[in-house]
Image (cartoon, rainbow, N blue to C red; front, side, top):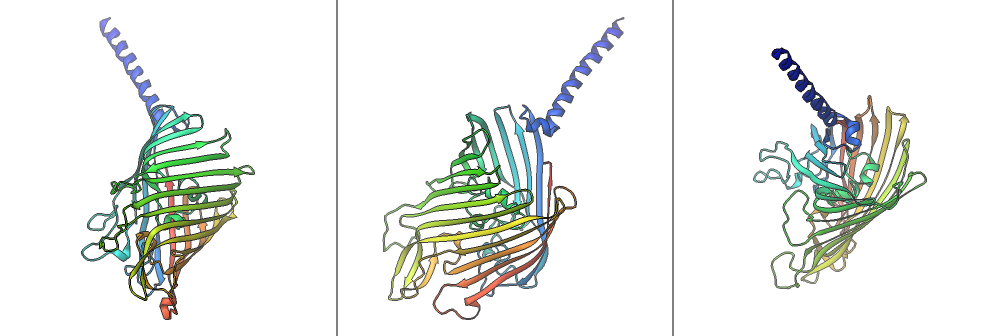
Length: 422
């Protein structure tokens, strides 16, 4: 009798823990449970994109800074297979009110033009032997509805600059960054942000953030980067409008003309950006433009002797379109950007300019970027995209000749992009 009771008790205990285990496994693996915000539910996800590229033409002066396919490491006729981004993420619902996000990224963030034999890369996601590796891109906790319609997110988080809206509607980060991303406005930062909606339907909203301004790197100064945007959607969310601004002090000292230390003056950056798009599943048309006010940013050598420190305005605008050719199977995309890093070029007064904000490359060179291609989707979340990548450079200096006047980088690519876990 006792063995029978013991066996029955053991069977009940086994069934009990099996039920708990199955329930936990359901919460762990079920995407519907995760999307519903069920406690102790999570999901692993990721995506990757890259290309086989052939460099058709190279700018003879190596302009373009940290742009793709710019500089001495990308000469004419070079070809290679490459990954440009690999994401591995884990999202987890701690409870209905709190969730956590972790994102590991391996990206081609190195500046080819800056690479040398003694300093092979300047990337934060490449080993010393230049092998690609993951770094922590996002790690944060979200407090949902800290007040009605607003979430508080603390940690390393996506900024309001473009990842939350304009990059998603552009939809082809696998082809190229948005125009503000190309100029390295941070897409993520360590700080605190409020992400909110003004109405129940989600037609109007805002994002406010304060962060270090150093992305995944440790804070290197005493100044913070302030971000903010407001957005609205009209006509059943087909028309999207977004207004964005940011500000960061870079240095804040009294100017000393005899100082040999770069940056010993009041130096700051402040961007204003506007975005508008008509967005439907079959056709999207968008435009994004910015003005970046760089206070005391450029060193300009005077023809008469001496150096002036100029406040300048960098500006750019991007136009794009993408849409269906064969629904769910074949799409097209095209984009055109123009960019001027310096509105204070004066060839009657100055002979040389040096920009102090590294991400803005040569202040005397205007750029025009063009890309276009096809997007073949054999199954959902798998894309093969033949495309052309072209960037033209024009000097603003007096009487430029030859390649200084105009030259370009031209690359032909077969890009691939796939998503898993979403």
